[in-house]
Length: 250
Image (cartoon, rainbow, N blue to C red):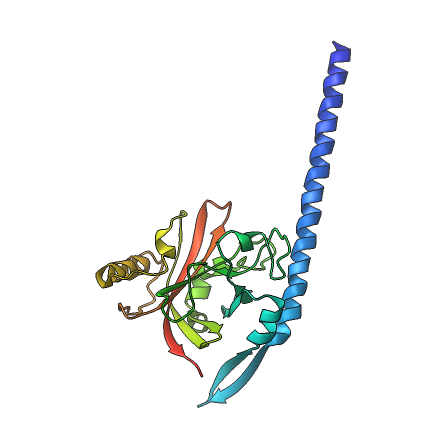
């Protein structure tokens, strides 16, 4: 009996040791890959210039993005995204599917944190009714790890947070937030184009009605929108932001 117990104890000890080694490996790998992404972000940020100026007593922020240089690093570069009072300040890429950049970074290296990427169905030719952008909910707050900030009253009641900046090679666009919420995974809210006008009206109203707060934003079937989406918590839900285009900069 004692011999049997000793054998069982040794087996359990070996299993525990293997478990410790495995989880230590996963943690170290995660740390290395997240650090790599931080270095990449810092490196490519030199291609994004920020200029502040006063216009009629109000401070305006202007962004200049060197897409030519960014595309030399990664031809999949498609946009730059900025969300106030979050860590979302990223160059956006677009692949041939919605899987690749879930586990590859800007330099196309295998990476658990992936990168910020647009839905592969988006064309960015000004015909998209809904531009959809995804990112992981990382524990260190990188990528879309702070997108969940939008669910807090302190965030969505702050006027400066209600304007999202998206820059493409075609221009600088401002989007006004009209809906924030969480939902179980589905395909409906990430629909990129709805040709039928009546269906698009229903679609917009559905997205607006889902919001946890009323942003008092009027929508019409001529509006083009931006959707940001990420997992939240244990991955069983998505946190979602919708905003409508209100202005194109010079």
